[in-house]
Image (cartoon, helix red, strand yellow):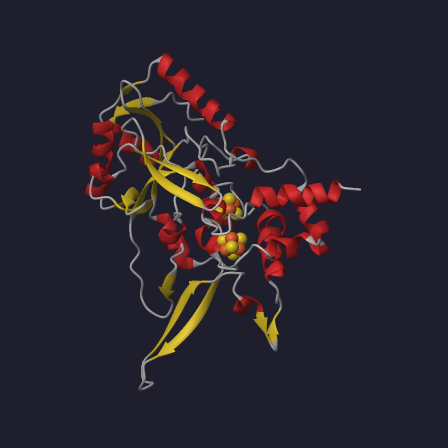
Length: 362
Ligand code: SF4
Ligand code: SF4
């Protein structure tokens, strides 16, 4: 869609700054990537200058490092430690009080994270019991997506059939082009996006620029650092229920829950009631939970999943198999965050490949 109909336009770096300015003038809190300490985080942007300037990242299993690039790229870094989930499904929220709904503009949402938002829509926003707070937040969001022209070594969205090109779920989509002229191919994907385009300074893209953009996306698909094995994952995980592989993973897994915290689709929560010491004021809070927490499956007498192996099996089986039964999609979008941010360097794609190999072994 991006490059077919309508044809993309071009904005320059000043045009990107103008977009941030216009969104803020329209009352949006603009959230985008920005450098904080040793990571690229998602936070409010006061202006376009807050975006990363020529900063890339090196990732691998259990590894994430910033590096200087030799250009002025603002979006050529793979997914960071946070996802957009935190803005639509906050880590902590009070349930028994009024809530202020922010008008967010998301700037720089990658195809994996667009897919993750669609997954959350199916989980939290769908009938018959939608989370009304989630829907209220979601309704207000203006999304400026970014096609991925430089995936990281932990990325595998192409093998999940998702990226590196965004095809829906955005108001505007950008493809960053560095080189002698720093510019962005830009297309609208909604009426709100078209209206914004009318206010932005832009020019038509040449045939050469469109072709080069397409080539960059083809190259990106071919250069994904990882691949999910091409097997029937749903069936594999069902059949692997009693595999000895889970205890092998448990020998490495710290049950720290990092993978569930960074995952853009993990949605589980727990609820806590608190009172002040005098007992005349009580509050009810919801916070993110994790299937790696023994309390998560605690029922009368103890946790259902006592071992770390059974908890990892639950997480991986849900992501890649039973999520289809519940919600009709994969629970994994191939962003690679759980690989980069696992302190033990446990790699979902490698564990899936190991399970498939074990099944094939005579
Ligand atoms: S797989 Fe890694 S990130 Fe997830 S709980 Fe185990 S050690 Fe933590
Ligand atoms: S399971 Fe891992 S790779 Fe898949 S969406 Fe979650 S964090 Fe990303």
